[in-house]
Length: 137
Image (cartoon, rainbow, N blue to C red):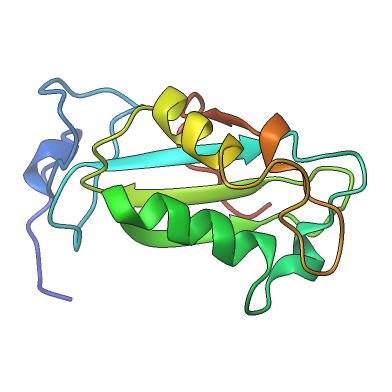
């Protein structure tokens, strides 16, 4: 990583890839991303959904990511291993869709089950961007 001068109390000197121009805790500062990022939270995929079992080829995670990638670049994603949570967090670059747009497309993937190893219901998916990036913990 390139050496960057950091100014005390001001993260703007690093690199602000967001659309806001003021310093605030909610602004994402990135040192290696070329464009604005959006973090999506995808939940409510069914009571028995187990996304940890859906990480293989043809699983629900791949299906959702392929659907999203046609309108953005996916930088990273995180799958909660707790089957009760059933949450997929996706960080994208240069997303051209709102959370409502992504929700419509994920719900339209399949009428009932998009899972390969468990029942994952795409038609009940809830997508939001509130809360920023979810980190491990």
